[in-house]
Length: 561
Image (cartoon, rainbow, N blue to C red; front, side, top):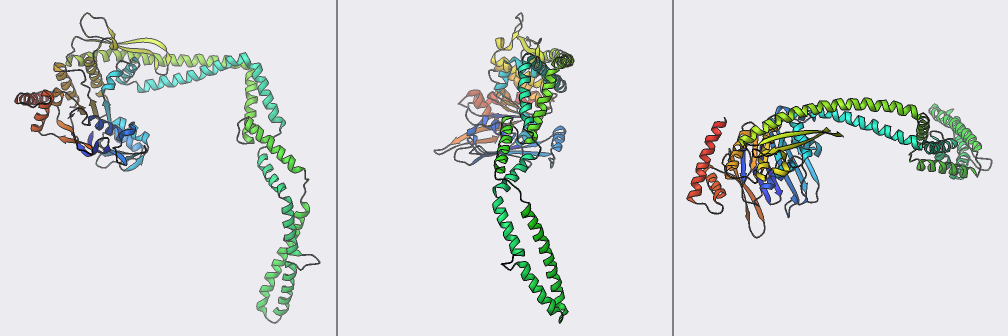
């Protein structure tokens, strides 16, 4: 569960820290006080998308940190990423600079945004007014049914079969098209093969040619320096070389060594050097004599390299090996096209087998959806009865459709809110208040099997009042007995049911506006509920109503245990 939230420089929030408790946490405050900013900050810490203007004016960065106590399932996932916990505590933080750069941390260590999001999705769910709108989109109904049915593995199996079928079907259709224009294709492929083969390319040839070109472009300089080195070492009749000077020196040492044996080692060393010079000059002379080139060879090499470059560019290849590989593929395609009829028959058989496997997987998926749809409809009607909608008839309509990545079922929620009325799509019959209660019923059902420990309801009570509001408050309170709940609300009925009540308010001066969050005492709760009930003025009447509402809430909560 979420135990602490720290926010710094986010919109109109300067620097606040909020400690949340287990159970039902309610947050109230006047419009514009910053309630939505809290949700944005939680979403930010968990790797969600953020608005560009999130960073508070005049500051360098925005920062949000959420501290959680995690369950066993989340702990196992963290182990997969080598993330260690201390006292079962997980800290997710995120910093966004004014120029839009973002950095995430898990327990103080830098972490990729994708991992933060994955873990965040296992920690809490946020349900807001936009979720109610999702009920109006029939494509979302399939997601609700699959989540309720626990169809993750079955759907993944079907999706894999669908992708396999799509791949083999596409190949079949391409081959059928190839049958139509195969002569033109073969003509093109044969031209390309002939062009590449006529070039007689060799692996590694380009590198050899580049080295040869470098040599040819500098051959005169190479010969000049090699001859100069040879003459310096061995000389000629006109000049005294290094060999000559070393030889004379050694002759002198040889004579001197007759009188002092210490000089013998020097004589031996120079003798060895003379032998080495003799070998080097002999090999150098052989190298010079062996230089063989024609002036026109540089043009031949340049033209060959230009041909290789043209072939690489034409066939979008990086090197000769890639060009030769492309040539082999062309030959394989020629053989395949020439044997197209046999190939088409083989692929046709693969298409049938793949479709049969897809159909079986789709049937299995549909059966689970039908069964889950019936049970979901019954469960929703039971939940709605507790939300003061006991006359509602709810049905999950499942009809066959074409194969898609999500199955071959069109799923739509139908409802009749009054006895005798025909079932109709939610978008054509349900009011805003009814939509809020239907969504709450669905969330209540799905949360029972969800690994997420924290649910956030952001003004899910939109469009309801009176008895319906009371029923919604009781339903959320029941959910909070097994899950941690954070609920932003404008309704006194819901606020009174909270185990912890936080007031969000803002304070402004001539230079800036700041948001504050305070955990209310019992007396402070009475004042806040009185404000919600009466609007601007707090009177003895509204205070008494608030006190009675709190007492009634305590009695109700005791009955939920």
